[in-house]
Image 1: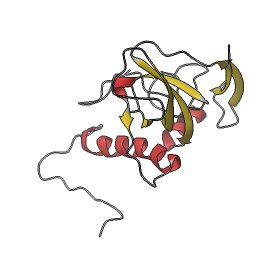
Image 2 (image 1 turned 90 degrees about the vertical axis):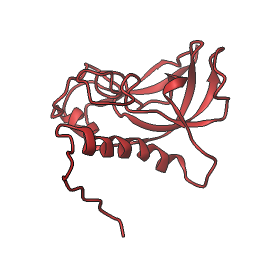
Image 3 (image 1 turned 180 degrees about the vertical axis):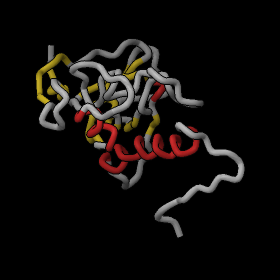
Image 4 (image 1 turned 60 degrees about the vertical axis):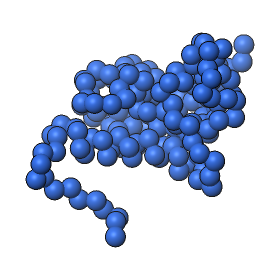
Length: 172
């Protein structure tokens, strides 16, 4: 069986708590795909988890980082929407795709293993296929956290109400 390098947060002491280990490359089930991770994006949330400052639950020895961009290298037998070679990004959680936040969801890099590894198996139905473009994996990996930040601004701890103002920085 082939192995991959996986980085786990072995103790909460900042980024020094991240250690490399070898683990098996997973095999996709019939509704899953195997993705070669090309790039990950490090967010404030990842630092807060590593330092023990994250206010929501985390698991011991979690694989950190929620955001990645990668390429499908194997598809499950029942998958028809993706093919080997498709480039994809995941959401921050498999079960939390829309609506109001529910505490305890399986967010990657906190209560579910994240993306700081070489390969990951994910359900195909949660993935977003990337268009062919000049945008690279590094830029696509950063899109995941951006979307979550925007969502949180509108629906997070304090939902916007009619009449509230929103500041959009970097616009003309």
